[in-house]
Length: 408
Ligand SMILES: Cc1cc2nc3c(=O)[nH]c(=O)nc-3n(C[C@H](O)[C@H](O)[C@H](O)COP(=O)(O)OP(=O)(O)OC[C@H]3O[C@@H](n4cnc5c(N)ncnc54)[C@H](O)[C@@H]3O)c2cc1C
Image (cartoon, rainbow, N blue to C red; front, side):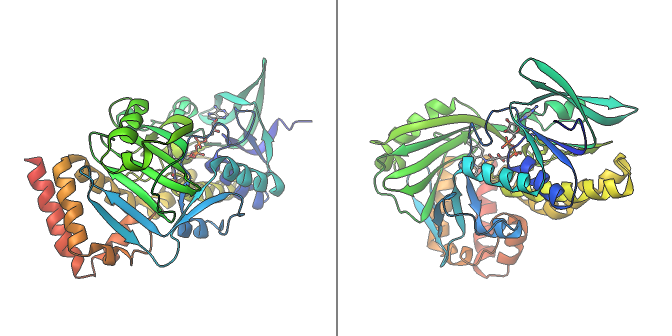
């Protein structure tokens, strides 16, 4: 028997929706989660590259071993002409997770904590009464039903449909990059413990391509781009990139998925009366790397806490829910501003300057400085810590000069 009224509703059973539900349920809140697909985590569109520190901060480390596909000690950055720059740490800093299993794991924990999941259940619309979001209309097969709640959390990802119905402004579509993520086998010359990042306008204009080894010659490969067709760009990258093609020319694509990533930074307002927005829907994504799982789940936890406080105070007004926005800004704000600036600079750099910059970074030993980076999610604060190192101001001056000349 369904409960057509609950304290909270979560729209979307992705990692951010389920993590909101988990944290709400742990606080004793009665929560219904609606997911349009028949299975949590499917279809998967994500590389699942997560920072270990981020997982620890969310209380999710260690993950069950079957979810973790590999751990990484660092990254190799490749310039468009094939120069490279290695950053290696003494212990693992990131991991690749199987996103289907990861999403199922979070959802299962939420369910065990008391959240009710409805699969094959698409939220068609929100019902607004007296200026407050009061309910959602859910379509299951041919049946439409009304489910009411005191607070509705929108975790529907990039579609941003519900958000607009609630009167909020979605992220700027011009800041989306189109991405492809593929599983490949028969890859040559992989260094198992390192992620590889490939920069260059010819292969991934406006973003980058990645290669994440899984072992046994298998890997995840993908890219995102501001312009062009991701499928064609991936083919070109695998066959023609000076470094990547040596590894990927003979590789077989086992499966590929296509999706977009919002890179413009969080939407300015992620709350209204009786309504909160989390995850990709709120563009809680790192503008530099496109990583949205740790950022999104960090805000999802805040959303659950604020929703719980709202329920205790019986106040679901924007004036109260504003706390969500201000806590998210406090947690992510300065880091996101920093990342947006860096992204703008990188976007302005022509390929030959990227080549020079990567060459220069390797020459001055910036890799040693970066080994002390403590946090790859919150890049603004890591950068401030790095500035204390004498090598950093030199590299930074060079980088800024490169950008200045590139913009001329
Ligand atoms: C190619 C690619 C690679 C990526 N790689 C990484 C990476 O390595 N690391 C990283 O951190 N991030 C990565 N990301 C970003 C990451 O995938 C997202 O930030 C993350 O999935 C956001 O989680 P979410 O819960 O907000 O949204 P989603 O994961 O999109 O989940 C939203 C869920 O809501 C459901 N839904 C939507 N609308 C409705 C509705 N009306 N009713 C019911 N259900 C609905 C959807 O079906 C979906 O299941 C990548 C993205 C792409 C495209």
